[in-house]
Image (cartoon, rainbow, N blue to C red; front, side, top):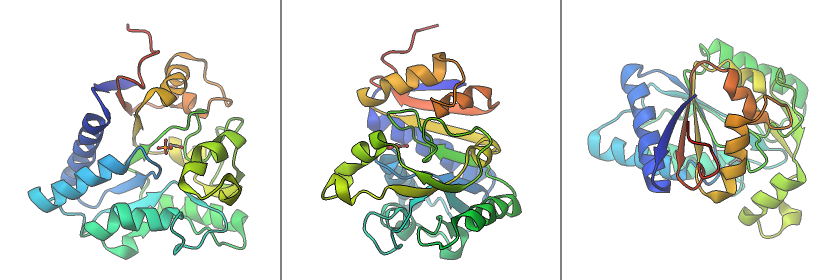
Amino acid sequence: MLIITAKDYDEMSQKAARYIAAEILLKPDCLLGLATGSTPIGTYQELIRIHQQEGLSFQKVRTVNLDEYYGLPASHEQSYRYFMQETLFDHIDICPDKTHVPDGLTKDPQSYGKEYDELIVALGGIDLLLLGIGSNGHIAFNEPGSYFTAQTRLVDLNPNTIEDNSRFFESKDDVPRQAISMGMKSILDSKRIVILASGAGKAQAIKDMLEGPVDPMLPASILQLHSNVTLIADKAALALVQPD
Ligand code: PGA
C-alpha cells in the first residue's frame, strides 16, 4: 500500500483531489466510487475549486456511491444522496443521470443489492474508489465481522458507528439503524482505491489496517491484499504507525 503523508486535513484533501482530478483527465468517462462522511468534504471542496478555477470537467464522469441510510428518502438532509448533491454534484457539471447513490427506500434490499453490483459491472467497474475508514475499521458500512466476499446488501449498523454518526443527527435515537452498503466484493473489484484518514480518532484503525492481520473484525485490513491502494492520511491519523 502506498502511504502519502499530509501535514493536516487540508493538505490531505488537496492531495486526494489531485489524485481524482488526474484520473478524470486521463479517463474523462471514468467510473468513480464515492464516499460520504466528514473526511471527504474537503476533497470535494477542492474538486469544486479545480472545476471552477482550472476548468476540470465532470461532464462524462460516472459515479457510484458506497452507501445510503435505510429508510431515509433522498430529500432527507442526512441522506447520503442529499449530502452528495449539496457537497459536490450541485457545484460541478456532472450529468445527474450519471450519478448513482443506493436507494434507501428500496422495498427489496436483497434484489436491489444484486442490481447495484450488476450496475457497477455494467458500467465497466470502478476505476477509482474513494474510501473513508470508520474508527472501528469499517469501510462503507461493512462493519466488523463482514464477509470479505459480501455483496451489496442491507446491513445493521454497529453501535460504535451509530455513536460516531450521532453528531449529524439531533439525537442518537434519530440515527438509522440500518443501511444499504456496497459489499466488500465490489470494493475489492475496484481498479484503484484511495483511502483517506484524518485525525487522532482514526489512528488505531489505521495502525490495525496497515500492521494487523487481515481480519474480518477489521474490515479495512483486507485492503492489504489489493494491488493498488493509496492511503492519504494526515500526521495525526498516522501517529501510531511504526516507521519503516
Ligand atoms: P467520517 O466517516 O469520514 O465521518 O469519519 C468515515 C467512515 O465512517 O467511513
